Length: 266
Image (cartoon, rainbow, N blue to C red):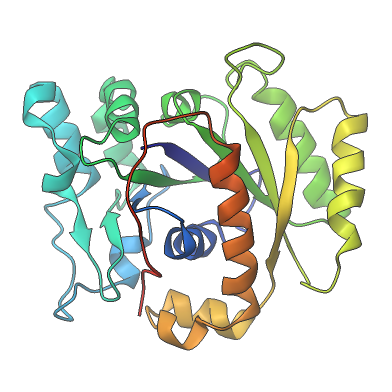
């Protein structure tokens, strides 16, 4: 079991879509947790296996309520829903005000997500990284963090700035440092960009690894956003995501072994 955070340094380079793609290609059974403190999209995008809207009373808020009542009452399984295509999801908040209501439960939530008794990995969509964010305990307890960025001048500038500002949170340079990877949203044919960005990050003295490219493929991304992952199965987006998923899984800190998962949204 393990906890893997997906986030961006600035803007929205497709963190939720990337998270869904990675969850679908993950080498072991995953749960996709929508932890975006600005308000999540998973509950709005996807339907359950019967085609009905997801239950608004089951998700992050109900899990947080269980945590506040006592850890014995909080089991991830009780708050997860299965969407069309088979992916298990923990739906998030719909507005930032709901995040504050979870208060100190975030630390306990992070530990619970990292130690699922059923042995599943959790892929946590944390949206945009912001100093002082409620999700900082999730980053600190993660087995690995993946930052999604565009390899533009401004995109890389924001990436470096945000990584430096989170150096203490992620314990860079220490034995207990959280492993951090970067995925670049770019043309799949632009193979040199990963090496170029890795060199830039090394010159900036940032101990992070560029794990690969998330291919720009608007048709496939739109299919996934609409919950029609079947149309995207053979796309460059999904193929590139599978490569990044495998590398991110290997990057994670050692954890107990879980089971197997399949492409999640049909």
